Structures are given as C-alpha cells and as structure tokens.
Length: 246
Ligand SMILES: [Zn+2]
Image (cartoon, rainbow, N blue to C red; front, side, top):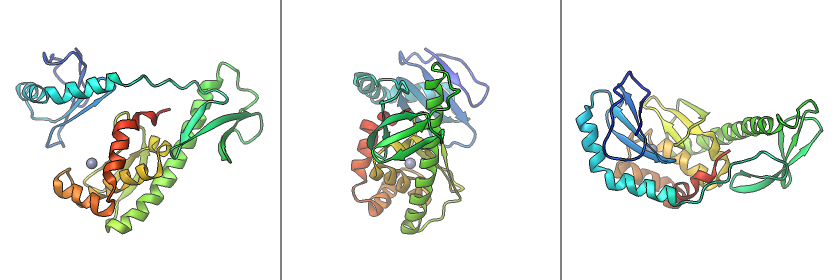
C-alpha cells in the first residue's frame, strides 16, 4: 500500500484498511473530508489538522462504500488506449468522428462535415506522428472546450443569477469541474467530448456552488430548479464519464 502526501510534508504511514493506494492530500484551506475513487486509486482530501487516528477511523467507516466503488470500477471493461491513427474515432459533443489525415495546410485539427481533419506536417516522421497527433487533438479540444464552456457559463450565469469571477479549462484526472469560494470556475476540458446536456449539467453544477458552497439538499434543489433532469446527466457522467478520455 502506498500513501502519497503531496500537499504538505507528510507521514508515509500505512493504512491497514485497503489493498489499494491511498493518496492523502492535506490542505490548510480545507475544512471537510472528501473521498474519490478513480482508476483504483483512493484519494482523500483532508484538513491540515486531521490526525492519523481520525483518518483510519474514517477509512474504516467508509470501507463498504469505497470497496463498492473499487469493485464497480474494476468490473468495467478496460478502455482501449488511443493510438492516434488515421481512421480512429474521436468523440466530440457526444458523437464519434473518424480522424482523417492529410498533408495539407493547416497543420491543425478542423471539424469538417462528418470528420476530423488534420494536416500533418511533411517533416513529421512516422514515429513521431502519434505523439504529434495527440498534441494537436489536445490543443483543439482545449480550444473548443474553453469556447463552449465560457459561452454556456455566461448563458447559465444569467439564468441562475450569479457572476463567476473567471472561467478556465484544466487537465483533471478525476473531476469535471470546480468552483472556488472566490467564484473562479475551472472545468475539465475533456468534457467537450461529452454530450451537450452533460456539459450543461456541469456548468449548472458549478454555478450553483456560487449560491450554495456545498452539496447539501438545499444545493441540489437549486440545481434541480435550473435543470430538472440533472440526475440523468449526473448518472451519465458516473457511468460513462470515463470514455471522455484522450
Ligand atoms: Zn459540486
């Protein structure tokens, strides 16, 4: 078992509770504990002051929930890793598009009709190609994500009646968005691969945190008020969110 503590200098002790890595992130700003399970990794975000004993008790208390999550995730078929080749399918707004390579300018991704088109620089060797394609796709996705998420956030901000301080996209491994108490909203750019309704749900989710900075029943009532079918989108993310990967 491995305990990584990447927020402050920490104790590398072992939790005798699970056969899975536990990543411990301590933060002086955090007041409550959150647990996430992704890719067989248990991530625990805790306040700076919490003791080793308290963490052990917490893990013990949450044992069934955590083991259920891990079991569910390991029962899922493995995602085929992307190869970044001609003809391979890539998701955009919930739809798959085959990647077409040309040797024509521009040397960047464009969406044309039913395909993603990418001009490959003649100087790119065959070995370098997959890495280069990945880089171009990432840049394109990030650009599309930022544009759409800024638009949708501006739209829903008026509906919800809030004013976010900033909207950016980030690379996250196991979350779709976040909203700071100062009103800075960050989204996972990989959301742009998902269906439009799912993207809107994450937008409404983060904006509602400007009204309620927690996940209380009052908070979820707000979300429901602005998006009556939000449960469907939330379920989609839980069940299928992992396909939004590059
Ligand atoms: Zn939230």
